[in-house]
Image 1: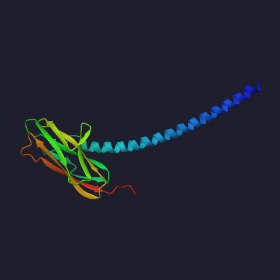
Image 2: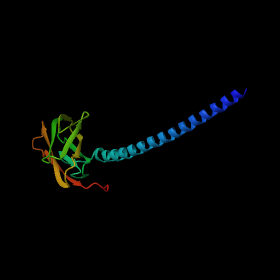
Image 3: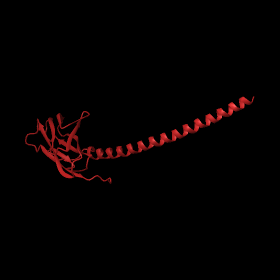
Length: 179
C-alpha cells in the first residue's frame, strides 16, 4: 500500500514538471510569435499606406503621361513607389507600350506586371476617356547619397503628337536608423 502512495506522488511531481515546462514554452512561443507579427504589421502598414497614396483614387490628370510624385525621396538601400498614369483623351481606344530607363547602375526602376518586375509593359489597352495606372517600383542598390532619375516613355498606337516621355527625380537620402 505504501508503494501506491509513493507512485502517486511521483506521478504528481512528473505531471507538475511537465505542466510547468509546457507553460514556460507556451509563454516563450507566444512572445516570439507576437514580436514577429508586430514587426510584420508595422512593415505592412507602411507599405500599404505608401501604395494606397500612390495607387489610390483616379486623379484629375490633364496630360497624356503623368508620374506622381515627380520627385521621390528614398532611403539608401531601400525602395519606393511612384505612380505612372496614362490618360486617353481621344475618341478611340489606344494600345500602348510603356518602358522605363535609368543611367544610374545602382537604381532599378521597374513595373510590376503579372507578378514579375520588368522595365517594359506591352499592349496596354486604354478606352476612350479612361486612365491606366502602373506602379513604378524604385529600388536603390545601396549606392551613394545622390540625386538621380528614371525616365518613362510611352509608345504605340494613338501616341502620335502626345508628350509621351516623363521622368521622376530620385533623391537617395541617408537611412534614419543610427549606425
